[in-house]
Length: 316
Length: 276
Image (tube, rainbow over all chains, first blue to last red; front, side, top):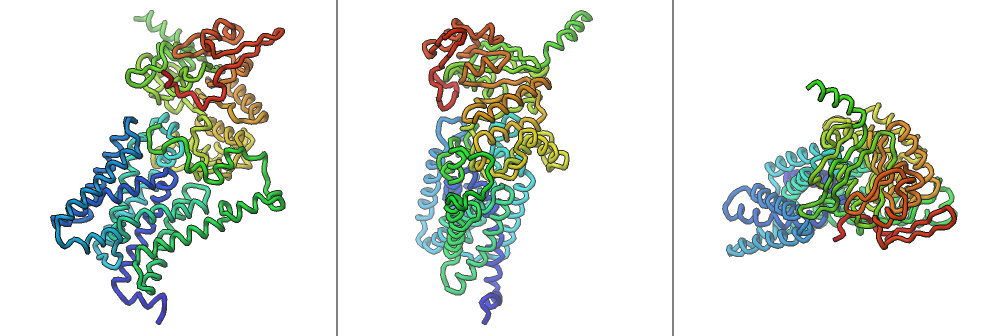
């Protein structure tokens, strides 16, 4: 009995591993934008917003992925459109559409008598149940998402870091925002079947946040996030298989452990490195041209992340 | 017709630089700024001064095409600014930058090269060389791989100046460039701005520091919802114009032949031009 190869005798395991590899990489890559542009709340909103589409498709016997995609995109566009003029703040717009869509899904599904099983499946995911078609859809989506992120890297990076310059140079900043939301939505939709509505947010945020602790440049952070998402996804699935635990939840817990390890031990941003740097004996070895300003210190400690003066998705 | 043609040719030299004609800018019915006529030739250094909410930043934003121009025009060397976006570079206000963003000094400077590249093209050897030259000129090439949040305020400012350098713009806009900057950097920035002016750049900066502006600029633009006065400091840095611009917000102390001026709201968090 081999821990690594034994499970591979089962076809459903092979399918689950392929799916988690693809989803982990895709979520980890686009998660870089979710982290630096503070879109975690939006990601959570989208994952709930696609719910009525899933229910309608399920009731009508149509493609669940298609139904989710349509309502998810509708909600994303509605959020962007309502928040565009600045009269309604973006987080408020999200709060309205996110809850409304989720409520609509629950009302629709409550008309059925035997909805419990499927509802649970969509809330916590079912990696064991993915079909070859699901994997192909996920692979196509992953290629599309990572392809667009690669081709438009310059444009998306500038629109994320310096919206003022991007607008001043005539970049279509609003359309780039929408594109990012669309990519995020299709990533979430294909991930929901595997990990569920509730846990997909962790797939997006946790590997990318871990990568941020290990990389100080955006490109490497994105690539590392994809790698962490894929590798930890596969390892997490193995763990869930051997301990007979829920796969999505096990993967998310393992990702959290990896994040915490990076949070403490990261060479540049870890808690330990930070302590050592501020210890006089070790601090003296760091070559500093002139001392960082107070502001820079805040940035190093990540406090600015929470209190950033600009809303990254609002119009600059 | 021939006469008109000759006129146009003769007028051309005057069109070099940045020109604002009858500019009114703002959103919807709320005009933040109106009646602005400015002729800023190449090789000039202008400071825009005015109280908080007077529209200093709005003026820069209108030149950048970010605040809608309701009437009037902005031209660079006689061409509408909308058509030559790359010609206008800017250095953002410190508060407008996300310093925790995972990006190095070198990457920020490289952004100045993006408009010269197409959508699909990646920066090449030539672009990397230009970036290195700009970093060197600003004296920060040894900090190229640092994440921007790990730099000091002065170093951060130099990064954005280096970015403006590689953009090959003829107009350079700076929003409060001396705020939060140490003495050495301030001197380096002043020296660089003078060099760029000698090379024919049109430089416009906003500032809260009137005395500094009067000392280091060759033109002052006094702004308070409209253009109050425009001209060399020797002609415009006078009590009547200061009062007309700042009203009661200003304290002028005359001591001997030196004039100390303190503007109200000196440490205001920014001038977004939205005061009623």
